[in-house]
Amino acid sequence: QIQSCLQEGDWRVSIRDLHDLPHFECRLTPIGDPTMVVEWLHDGKPLAAANRLRMVNEFGYCSLDYEAAYARDSGVITCRATNKYGVDQTSATLIVKDEKGLVEETQLPEGRKGAHRIDEIERMAHEGGPYGVTAEEETEKMKPEIVLLPEPARVLEGETARFRCRVTGYPSPKVNWYLNGQLIRKSKRYRLRYDGIYYLEITEIKSYDSGEVKVVADNNLGSVEHTVKLEIQQKEDFRTHLRRAPEAKPTAISGRSVRFSAQVSGLPQPQVFWYKDSEVLSTSYKCKFLHDGDEHTLLLLEVFPEDAGTYSCEAKNDYGEATSSASLTVEGTYGGVEVLSSVSAL
Image 1 (cartoon, rainbow, N blue to C red):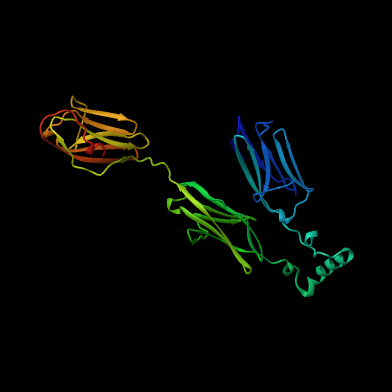
Image 2: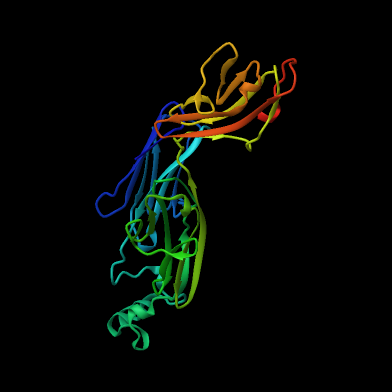
């Protein structure tokens, strides 16, 4: 079940199988939205209404029913709802197992008519195929094809990346997954499974997993592959950071003002302390602390030779701490007020 804010409320989709015939249903809100368009897809391609497919869309209730199902119907069935506010979808896997002895009209050779066609079918069933070939060997050989392509993924660090694909071909293709060129083998972190659809899950995703995921399917008739991007979004860093410029040894004129600034970030909000030669500074007639967003500033209203030394900004929270420092030299004569740009950042 999924939820998506498309307009005033949520819309919810649940898909389930009833009895032996596939039944899919969706419930959508808001009801009566004239801009709402509902589509059913098979392996990403729109399903058109047909004699054996029945689609209903009434008062927020949508359903898809198969009056008959064949092996070729296997795949990913998707319900997609779209209105002027957005689009959302949900999917489920449909697997239809072929029954032995079931012959569809499309499997018969063109041009064979009437009783001759029936006689040929019966002969193949009793003799195991034409000229002694088994019925299994008579299956049309096909090179691999990826009919449901895996999609690019953007995953938060530490979460699970999921990929899936559906492959056709005969003999049954061998399917392998690769991460950045390395073959993926089943393990605690890498989960591989197959239920008619091939699935790959990479758990506890790391930043170094970022790159390309490739699926390769091959049999003795050929090979096919498809590559998608895997992007890892780093978790918000709760440690404290100080963004600083290269350390400098500025020189200030005696009697003038000096400003030190530092950009501080972190969650929870860090506490900021200023030091001179390892001694913590506090507000005084000549020492002021300013704070504007992430920018923290130490303002020395008048500096004299005894104010020379190393000034440090320390930021800390529950997850860590960071420090940045700069040295100050004071010389020259008394004068007006000047802010030294060379020490405007730590």
